[in-house]
Image (cartoon, rainbow, N blue to C red; front, side, top):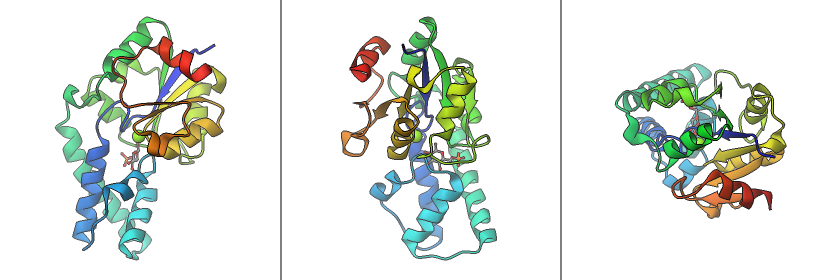
Length: 217
Ligand code: BG6
Ligand code: MG
């Protein structure tokens, strides 16, 4: 029986993936190189320091640990400038109604995100109150594809992974859910999320009952 839904944040609830991309691109450009949207896919679900290491690798650039920390902080400042301007318009199609419906029906709801800005982003779009538990980058020690973030979410809700559905837009996030014994819904394209139990392009025009029927089959 499904009791809970665990949501990734960036690219599932809010349209912030484009801001992470823009801010990292600005950093890469300042360092004299660029990277593609395809490469950016690999950054989804990856922690801030994990991301900078991948990006510098693509640019063939070596920095000291201290320089990396400085650039990661600069990227975060740029990202926060985008976040400050954010409002409810940045909620992804269908996400608000879907989460509201889950709450009305008594499902438990938690967040499982790598971001250290999760509480701020949810506050900006006025959705913080829906989440009973927030497991984010300030609490985890292992990055997706490790299932830790979702295991902590399930434990906080007192649920078994087999009673939870994870919603994820990152390939590594779907892998994390599957590895942890959760049902997984990939938000995006079957091209990179084909390993999810179900792939959706958005949370519009779909009910939790239809999702449960599909993932449990
Ligand atoms: C994930 C995003 O949710 O959070 C990544 O998919 C991002 O792109 C990561 O790097 C860490 O976010 P933050 O806000 O702590 O830099
Ligand atoms: Mg995401």
